[in-house]
Length: 286
Image 1 (spheres, rainbow, N blue to C red):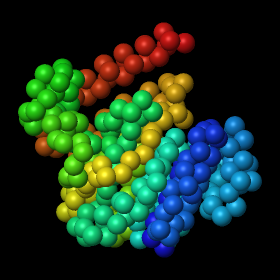
Image 2 (cartoon, rainbow, N blue to C red):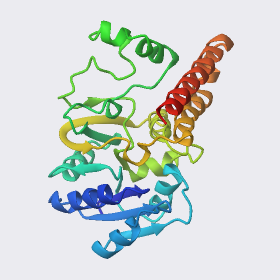
Image 3 (cartoon, rainbow, N blue to C red):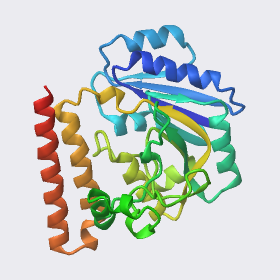
């Protein structure tokens, strides 16, 4: 088996059906298996998927176990040389799976690869091409210095926007909407960290992959469309909370020991303020 494709579904019936259809329509020469992990959807998506796609391996959870754990359930059952995390709200373009798997075949030092991820309006989903969120890079991004000095690497560490987005190159981290990971890499660094319920698990995984000596690449020679945030568009408080909790977890686990007390205090205070503001905006919108 070449590629094990894992899709986590939570109340995104039409999007998930379209995503699966796009995989079959992409004319892949790679041998694939598709896992659908359903996190206790209530929109009838599980029945619809079972009815239409008989050859998909389905894992039906009795509760919403989160993105990390759901993917890990399928990874543990998968047989592919490569594992592809694919969001349910994506459309795979023709040849995408082959282009990325072939690239990894030809570059044995690469632990994970992502493609160009486009939003429906044609703009780049910047999450597919990122640096690690260090305190400095996060600050420069927050105050807009990356936009003021677009060609300066020092100020563009957050989205690496000073690099050519049409060329293949190494990056720090990819987005979980499309991330192909080598099985040997997973065997070395472990599965997704289930402390992350939703958000942050992709950055954490990429950090551990690079710490183990593997390279991570952005390959824009192929692309997908990402209907971003479809399963969390209504943004209940839990989603807002989990997004900010992921920031806290990542910094505490990977950066806190590297920085003095006052920097960590500033980071945690910033996350708390951002959570408070986002929660207020979410409440007002209701």
